[in-house]
Length: 451
Image (cartoon, rainbow, N blue to C red; front, side):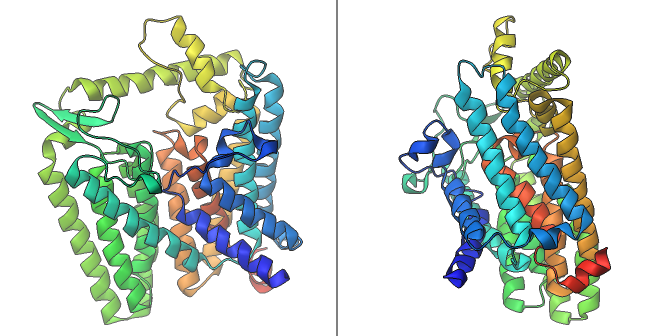
């Protein structure tokens, strides 16, 4: 029975990472969690099963984790952040009228943190887990490219695809003069979310591109090229920036590994991957140049000007909210409601929303206390990841480089978008990546060397 539970823990942990690009929600809600919106997400269910199976095995691993001081600081800061988030329901801005808003957001964060701590405790092979991202990238990029070609949805309702087409009100489009481009959605409710998931997959494929196994390397090249084309065609500026940050973090290690391998086939694969990426990148951007100019502010299209203006407005709202409640914040999940009340007092044609910056989001909702815990957790995770990479070797080391690069990319995205903080899929990606980067299941010898 114990072996079955351990296998279930690993299987559902891998499945959780595979579900990052999938917005599927099941019917019905557990009776005890009836007011929590997040509980119907398939990714929440897989996380719950993985954590539950781990706890049934006795929750092994925390003692080993505690022997590495940076991993311990990371875990304690995250758990303290969850405690503060649940406590914030007591002073939440809209808590008296809609307590389920704060409860659902706190439950979501709590489950993600438990999942991340579990990933840091159990013995997961970081390279094999990364395989789930690569396979997901191939599927996701294929759907994206087909949606771009069709300029609309593909009819995959059974997989949770949202309906969208050129003349549909409210969808995300780009305009350049008389030209209109419908941005792809994948299996997610917004192109920026699709871009974030593709970015993660492309970085994972980059790790496979320098694998010592030729089959894995070939799959990595194919997936990476497909994914790069797809992420460029989302026209998400935050994901583009995040991809650059992640690639810069990964590139020195990838080149060094190719040098150490001294394999002609590996070098050919690496050069081929770089050449194909360059051709695809230049080709896509040249073919869609009018939309690229519109998206980067080179022309004054009204849609793009409105997008930038809206973000500035919500940044201003965030600072207003922080000024009102600097220490404790408005409560987790409550900032969009606070902005709704700000908007009523203005002439803006807007609805309440999150600020497109994860650090301001945390500060506004959880106050200075929450922001400090959040930054400590991120910092400890990065330091722990760097230390683990320095001590690890071979394929495992490159995998940890990949996981840390993914985390850094999501942190970079967080300067321009809110989803690495507000949505369960990307919360799991961020904190799960830091967990795997730090070296889950490291040997006692390596732990002694780290300390």
